[in-house]
Length: 60
Image 1 (cartoon, one colour):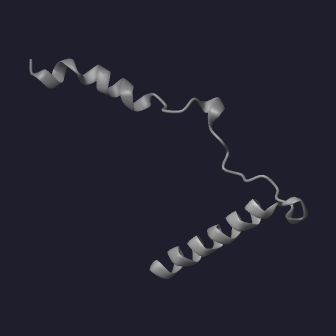
Image 2: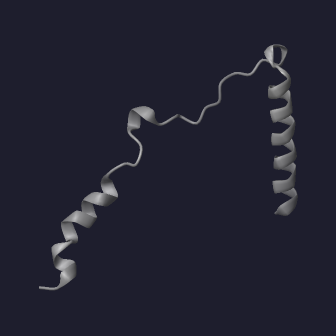
């Protein structure tokens, strides 16, 4: 009876346990954005995001 034999059930249960509860996970869908209601920080964040996307695209 080796050491791994005693840990078999513990390791199997660990793989099936979620890290984040299902009710706290997001569906990955973004909310609607209205440019008319955006403030300066929103527009600045959009510009930074677009620049980061371009850098990532050029890197590949």
